[in-house]
Length: 252
Image (tube, rainbow, N blue to C red; front, top):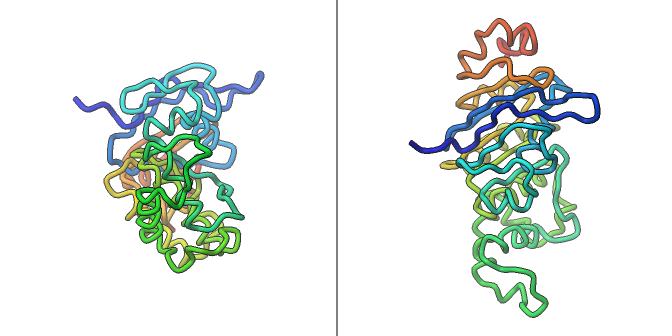
């Protein structure tokens, strides 16, 4: 039997006397698109920080393809095949779009820290960066500083950086936040394309995005998962409507 892509068991995180994550159980199958929704302050970003290694859990288990990763450093988890984006765009603003992507592919291609190799001589890294550049639709912006991109383009670049290393589990933290309706539609199409065949876990407040993209949805309220299921099951769940969705489910 194939292990889940991601499995959380009895996961807890406290800061001092305040418990933020209170015993979360969550299973995400390989190849699944799984959305985590919930009100502000529910613990969604903390949960992502635990999975990606930014925080160590107070107790509980986090398994990536069956391997325990709870408490490991972020770079160790990334090298095991998990990558994430952030709510606030996280790119190298002074580097060009292409240089951002080239940096992202180096480790996965076997390149380590070296003062003696010229980056423009690493043809496999150049080719991989060009491939990702094409996929995220920024080829025309290849040689401009990333800080000069529009907000939506910067989010697309961050998505490119997230997938460039070849991770098979992708965590996206509010990928369409701050976008217009047309920008959101373009972002959803891009996410769907670049995560095909991969496992996607996303935190998102736009219910149109959630119900249009996710195979399964988990609802986090006050640090606990109160429901998990298909979009149809979540729409119909009275507890979810009372705790979070309200009229959003009908509007999505």
